[in-house]
Length: 87
Image (cartoon, rainbow, N blue to C red; front, side, top):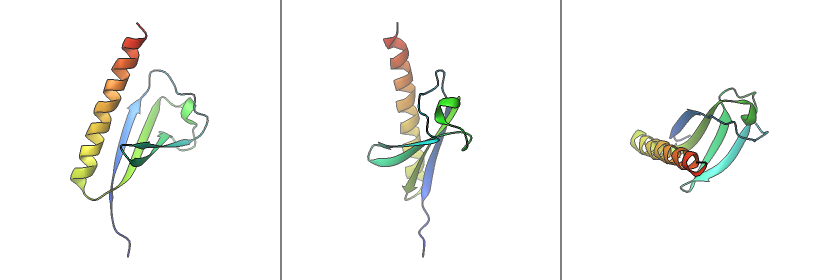
């Protein structure tokens, strides 16, 4: 019997495209496996303005939402810091 789990799917637009030739890139966030992909699965990450981070395996909706909210806040902060660093 397969246990149902919840996931976080975070979609965002990049101002400067990432130089990642693959269609997906695995990494970890706060001990969880995450997958970065272009919005279109057939497109390389470096060719996409819209990217998605998928993280799976949450026990319930609340845990997935909390992780997604923290991920959003972290990306907003990282975006602000990188803009300020270039001044």
